Length: 312
Image (tube, rainbow, N blue to C red):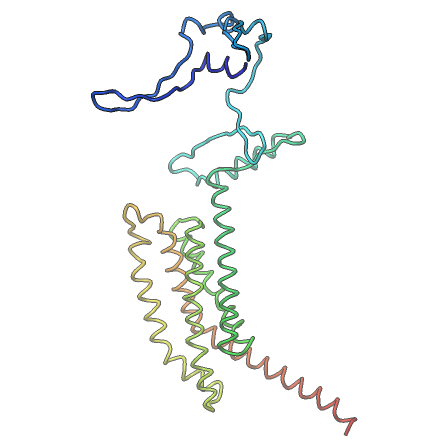
């Protein structure tokens, strides 16, 4: 009954047909004429067909009342919602900052009853989901790198020493975004994932040569002083080439590639600061880690001697 009344007033689509001259497809909409659906009286006279084919007016099977109601009912995750759309002005605060300010202001001024609330949707929700996926990918990448480095160096200290060097690029990342007046986005996180592998290469090149020289019998400090100048050239050349290639994308993006400007900015900033700091910090961390390992081994040997002394 409700469907029949709805289609009588709003109309319903029927089969499609083609015009013979140009074969253009048309769809037929069937409903009551305009003078038959103007007011409440016309609605009461809408014909309703019963299961047995009898035709009666709508007023004989239903009582019509005028009430206020929504013209559109929306649901989100099986919850009834009311969407409020808005757009930020050019030159104003970013859309995400504006949305968060409005959300906090609404929560502070409106006392929502139980079962009611306000949430962000649209670009904000998609960005949060993208953040979570990329962060999970970054966590997995770091875990796999640790496992690979442990298998390669057969040690737990050196891999964690190299992983700690990843924090050196944070200054360059945040500084690059600040200087370029760009915000942290999903593209920026993707650049962090790329930087993780590139910065790890710097640490691996440095520590690998130091360990090889020490295995040949060279003292630790001498091995560091020997390995640093040898690895300086390939490390600097690799980082410099990457920075030069990404400069047009970061500072002179063309139409269609400007969305990847934050990726280039983060990569340039992270490589510039991270590479310079890694050349100094990674060898220093290696010396501290080696001293700590030597102290632990000496402590273990003294404890073993004390346990074996009464037995002797």
